Length: 375
Ligand code: SF4
Image 1 (cartoon, rainbow, N blue to C red):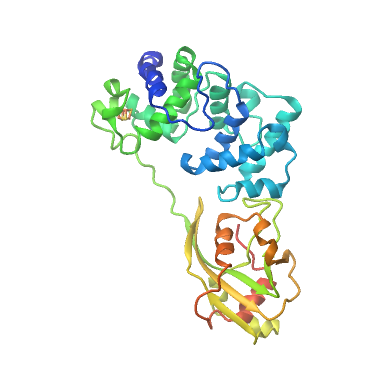
Image 2 (tube, rainbow, N blue to C red):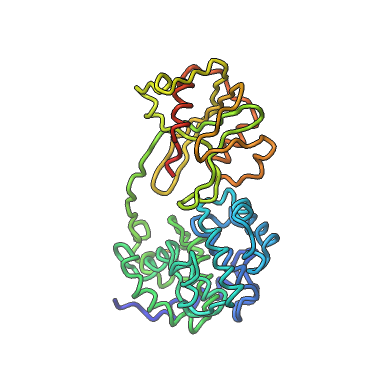
């Protein structure tokens, strides 16, 4: 690849960032030294994985008030960190953050990329972002936004991620010369605010030399990579209520939603054609079954069409293995994932009109037989 040298090509970015940057609570005013609070950079980068800046800001502020440094976070319980992360999704990030904090509290900060990448939850991008923003190391951090900017600037045809290593080598001298923190954040900011999928080239500090703009090819560089269509399933998410208690699944130790409580759920397809009521011998004559408005829950690789149900029984039955009856007044204290929080909010009100379908006995038989979430 014959790309013009990065220090000259990227030079206008530093000044542009100084004068156009957004003030974000984790950003240092001073761009040339070591960041005064590397922990704030680490927290922000973990939170920003998969989540928009505007969503992260209030979470970041709350988190920093409760866990202002690595040692205060290292002693926190699962329940507490999940509670402070509740609504951000991808809860593994919170546990990774605590594990990193424990390492830092015990051994001090690793300040180079080799040490940072050993911290839990830090892949090459996040480790490079922390190394450059917090410690001024010339480590290019390439995420989707950065790849888009560089692909356009250099006129790279095809998937720019295939050129990740040459791009890092190319960019490094610009970070060395103009400042790692300034250039890394400048590239992030340009990708977020100006060189967006529909770019605002008229406002771009790099427009004079941008190959894609010169070739009038910003609509095809970089190409849109087709994603695999996510799998879709339909579920009943069931809030079973009896004697002022709700039936919930206890948190799993591992997996995507480890540490979070869940409502029982049943795949709608499992109720079709099954007569588990007769099989289980259960009859629930005294019940009230209603629905709430449903929604579609989108995960990275699948979508769930959620039909929330409110099933009120006269009395509790023995909680099945892995489940527990939770007193209504304790519900607010539990850490739940986004989908399950939504049902907790709904559960403060009675559902809509009474239902006859799905059959209550079959539904309960499936719950008792371990019809638990797919996650
Ligand atoms: S000129 Fe346009 S396409 Fe090129 S880097 Fe700037 S915003 Fe992106």
